[in-house]
Image (cartoon, rainbow, N blue to C red; front, side, top):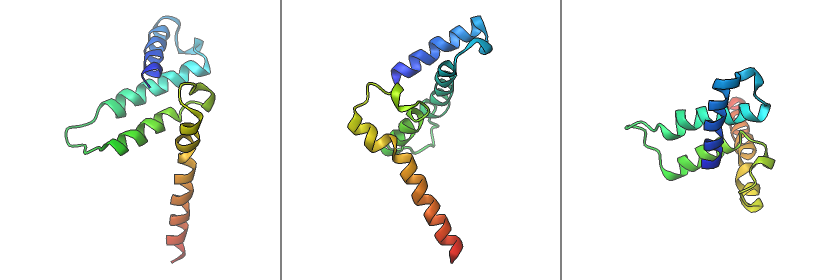
Length: 103
């Protein structure tokens, strides 16, 4: 995550020089990551009771901004378990919602 943050900061500096129009799609991903990382992950409020599991879920949510091919430093085993986890969570929530509507 720190590597993506560092690249995001570099991209932010580059954006100030060349303008947003000159940025690639990947550059825009790094900027989006930077904004969300600083805005929600680092800025935990004093009354925000976030445990380690919530922090890890947030971290994976940020990493999911990138295609799997960008996550080279994460083992395939961890990617298989956690990167695709979002789809499973959304499927379960959708099933619950449909079940509640059917009652």
